[in-house]
Length: 452
Image (cartoon, rainbow, N blue to C red; front, side):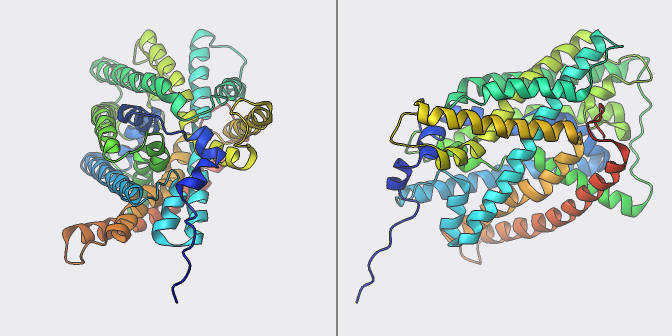
């Protein structure tokens, strides 16, 4: 006797009654809008950490790892987009990473695993964005008023207030114009930064260049894996299904165009920032290279107007980045708190949205003020968050969906990437957390200086 068919837990009919899907992840975008979202999610001020990542790898290994990360992530995101397209054609359109993973892998625990990892990523990036924005304000303030009394946590509080206001933008799709501006800003401050580094390297005050690595073999290994974790965080996004969800259906093929747009910007910005910064500062590169251009014990190595303009560009883009990564948290909140039967801006839905989003931003701001660990936070997030979601799961999902023959190159390439990055993630987690613990001895709570 035939078994009765079971309802699909991720069917389109359920999406239509899901406030998180309808309100936050509304599907109206064009492919170039997805490109704007992707670029904002990947190409951010974390590129200023690239010379710092190179200091743990050196020139040759640094170039190699940067290139490998770029190729693997483009390949990974392309595979994930194909899996999403395949599910959509089969009548199972997924707009959330966790639902895609649970459906393809047929595992309830995978649903909660992805939620946990995405929460780590989104909250970590939210904290990092607020922290770096506060540091940008502090840099401008210290130049305008060298003897001023304001501390880092006070600038973080200012940024948090602005983020609370911007957090009330209701949908991911509504960010498309802001994210286009973000793309332009990333190009702007990269060119300013590269020009400043070239000028600093050619000036009479150029710092002594030393590209040597750590003295002991064990320290070199730990530094290398920490740097790899940082690179993973820089290339990672962990929210590609949610970005693809903003595309008007059918989404088939559109995300690849968005990826090509994004990686064109990545090629221009990542390599130029890494090469110019590491060339000038070598193993003295700071986790925020702008601080290397403005040393405490000597003259500024770049014109004040250049530094100031770059800092303003970074500050503005950080608001967009914080908003992009908060969308998963917001759609979870709306899914649980909003009533789909009432309007997006009804009093019933507006008040909970205002309260919950405000509390979320305040939490991120408080953590940013309490734990100013920008470089180390990147390493931990890359190891425990981005590597599983961006370097492991997409290949596994592709193999499970398309079931390539075990004799095919695709199957073994995917298996190799899974194995290699699982190992790198484990080692990176250990080395990043080790560095975080070591750095914990160098600061006090609500410190006015970001620890390198």
